Length: 122
Image (cartoon, rainbow, N blue to C red; front, side):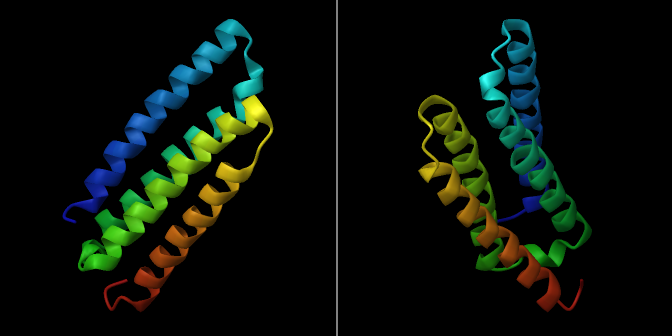
């Protein structure tokens, strides 16, 4: 996958917009039961995607090969599952999806660490 830094930043900005819009809605309607979903959109969503985008922009060689694409899919997929899972938890109390998303995201972070520490460029 080419230009992962830009892809990560595009995703981060979309999640930032979504998180801010949800926060505005929560404040306007006093729907504070969704605050964990708001946090999940902004932290594992916006912040983590922006950090990974920065890493790929600073060390572009890291995105060579299939492992970088797998790292993106794990990280973005894990964030999406955490966001959906926190919404499910707010509605039903179940933690199955958010726990699964957390595990997937941890794999994405571990793969990023492995790519970074094994790269001759980093």
